[in-house]
Image (tube, rainbow, N blue to C red; front, top):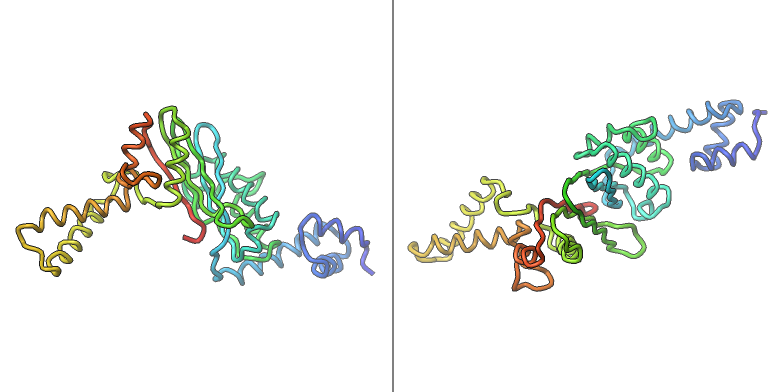
Amino acid sequence: MANFTIADIKALREQLGTGMVDTKKALEEADGNVEKAVEILRLKGAKGNAKRADRSTSEGLVAARELNGKVTLVELACETDFVAKNERFIALADKVADAAAAAAADSAEAALAADANGQTVDQLISDEAAIIGEKVELRRVRTLSGDHFEIYLHKTSKDLPPQVGVVLAYSGDDAETARSIAQHISFANPSYLSRDDVPEADVDKEREIVTEISRNEGKPEAALPKIVEGRVNAFFKQVSLLDQDYAKDNKLSIAQVAKNAGITLTDFARFKVGA
């Protein structure tokens, strides 16, 4: 008979979060040696991770950390909403966000290589995924610098952790307006801060498309330049934050709202789980 007790099984289950049957089998295989049993369970979990590699991860959460004058926003993804609201998954996201912020990581790759209490974030996620029993992946990470920040985390369901995260960097003193603009970003989903940030190739492509559309509509050739520029401006209002109509008052642009409040928007990040 293997040299372990029910209390040993209970203690190991609490340590790793593994099932009763798997824990008992691992202790039997390890002849009661707890360290060997842990290794067996983790190897089994790692094999499970490999089998889950091709599964899609459309659920999860967003988290943010402010540290050393910077804010780091992360998206940690999983397979189901059941896991997304699980305490172990939420605790894992907290550890990942802490490690990413400490490393000031500005990409998922940099965050995965960051230290998390003696192991990499990549290994931490792998170990926890083996226990959770789903594919877990760090999808996106951004770190912003700035004078001031507004962090807005939005729950799309009261039963789930935040699914949309916005970090707005700005200078000035009107935190209330900055928060309102962060909420606007969560809803309006701009791609760039200003029209100057939009890649020239994207603008040229849009101009080419709307020119063709305008011609197909039979617009007079002499009027095309004005019509095309109007439609290109409409494109900027979709993708450029400063050009967008303010969600709370569409008679004002975000640029006007910021100017009226005496703040300057310098950067932003927006993540939506699964998007």
